[in-house]
Image 1 (cartoon, rainbow, N blue to C red):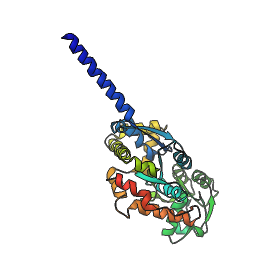
Image 2: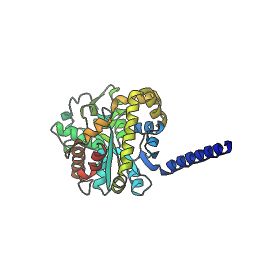
Image 3: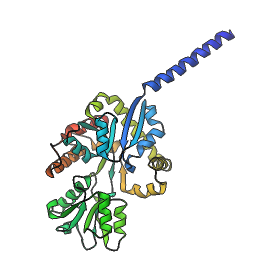
Length: 323
C-alpha cells in the first residue's frame, strides 16, 4: 500500500512538472522596443509584478533610443512591438511601414513646449523670430499647431533645423529667439534671466500621445495575445496607481534614473488608464483617428511623407483591443 501511494505521488509530481513545462513552452514570446522615456515605464511594472506571465506571455523589453531603428528592427522581424508617438506612427505608415497601433500609453502634459525670450509675450509674437526646431519631428508638429492657433504658420517664423535637445541648449546659450524642446531644457530655459516657457503641452492635451504598435500582419494574426498583452499592461498601470512608491521604484531602476529624478518629471506626463485608452479609440472618428489624420496631413504638407496614412487602419486594431 505504501508503495502504491509513493508511486501515485510520484506520478502526480511528474504530471505537475510536465504541465509547468508545457505552460512555459506555450508562453507567447513578445519583444518590445522603447526609448528611455518615463511614459513607457509601466511596461516594467507589468513584467516585474507578473501580469504578463499570468496572461501567458513571455515579454522581453529592449531599449532602442531611435524610433526609426526600432521600426527597422520590427520590419526585419527582430522586434514585435514598438513604443513611439502617434504622430510618428502616422509618419512611418505614410512612408511604407505597414503597422497598426495596439494601445495608447500616455500623453505629454507639460514635458514638451516652446521656450522664448521674455519680450516675446505670446505665440503670435514669434512672427519673424528665429526658432530652433527639429524638422520632420513631433517638435515641429507641436510648433505648427501652436502657430496655427495663433493665426500663423511655419512660414511666418525663421526655423533653424536642430535636434530638440540641441534646440534647448541653443536657446540657453542665446543663439536663437525661441526653441521647441522638452524637459529638462524647458526648466533650464525658464531658469535663465532672459527666458521663459511660452507654451507647453499642459495646454495642448492629446497632441503628443505615446502608444504601442506592431506590424499589421502580426497584430491581426495575434489578436488574442495582443488583447492579453494590453490588458496585462493596464494591470501594471492600476498597480502603480495603488502602489506609487513601488511602481516608481520599478520604473526608475529599469530606466536607470534615481527615484527623485523620476518623480520630478512625472508631473509632465499623464499615464492613460484603461478607461482613458478606451475613450481615445472609441468611435469611427475617435480622438486617435483625428490625431493620426492631423499628423499625416501635416507631415505630407511639409514634404516628408510619400502618402497620407489610412488613419482608420492605423487605429482599427487598438479600437478592438480597447473593448
